[in-house]
View (cartoon, rainbow, N blue to C red):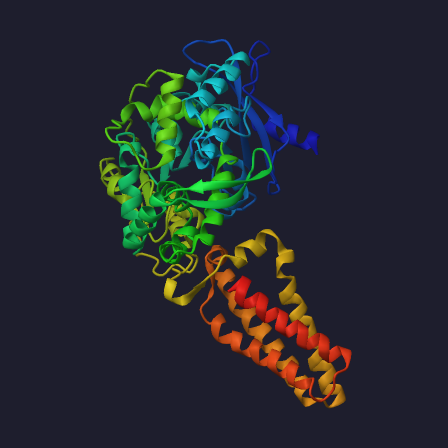
Length: 572
């Protein structure tokens, strides 16, 4: 296998002289990949203005096997900064079946070398949910000192160098031209790469456009408030933030870095911060009206998945790279005239104040290739309010919004169809809109939901559903035994229990099939009606005791009564 990888990669790379080190080298793919994919590293200077130390930038190339294979591939980079890219190679190969797909990592990212992880600041960020909060600046100084001991120069990890990596990879792989695809932060990278390498870029796709001129941190609070209001949860959101700022909630969760449980203290501003991050996901955006509404009614059990999401987010990025980019290319261009309610904004400012990296020089690049910009109507990070004007300022660029949140190509079949059509023929007349998008999850409303944290807890610890499983088994036994022995009351008790289980399972799995995240908020409101069927089963089981008091009937009655106690007191 390794020999085939090396051979395929060698055949795809231009020849170099013996005196010149090869710009790329083969490497095993670090994640599962589709067939006909090879992985490797691009070797590049850590700082092109100060040659010396080098870095390795991870990438993958999937070769299309279509008989109609096009000569110019699609090249994709994840956002972040510090989001990985390689894991989407298979997804993109299905989106562009007639083109090679190249996914390129950001230098310093998870699948590049060195990896600029920063567990010190990640742990301190989680420590914002402890009381007293952790000292982020001190953690940042410890992280930088450790990276410096490893010989890492953080000044080499910025947008300018990442752009140069994209251009260098095209040249190393020998593609005459290709199509750039960026999302969120990497829309800046791809915009600059298109301007820096005009002869090598055929078309540019920018999903969730983050233009250079936007002061993201200064806009963050407004962007969140506008998004929540657009989802119809603005008033409920204000009530939640106000209540929890007065009396923070204590929420059990787990520290993913240490693997230890702890109790987080979540204020209203903490909840706002977590929501600002979580609303990037279309599945979360779809349930936000019910989630925020439930919190406004005092259902603090819904804070558990939000607290867990903080920990999950801390292991999804390499925060050394993230802050190196932000401290050079984003934070210096914001005023910070008022303190944000979002602790992520304040943490980034504290890290950058501690690191004191030099401010970059704005590029203000304008691509010459055709540009298609797409965005989500409920995007809290790159809203159409800022992305639209910036897109229209690019000569000839097209701008279109879709129902959804951040990175709409991941969740919108319509967006994927339009993007693929643009790449196929960038200069073709624009087709009609594709109409309703079945891939988008439906909006979850509080009125249609019975709010409970039980399904989420069961998803974390399935054994908690044991009473439900026992009730179903007992009901099945009652139904079979009653039917075989002519015990009508027992049979009807079992039938009612099985009917309850079937209807409940159908409702819950139907909700999960439309949007699994909805189960973090509760269950369909119809579950309350089905509960009466379970109650009828329990009553019939007790009634059967009047005919015979053999031990199976006693077990069935106790199981039914115990299930109802569990159902009403714990689950509902």
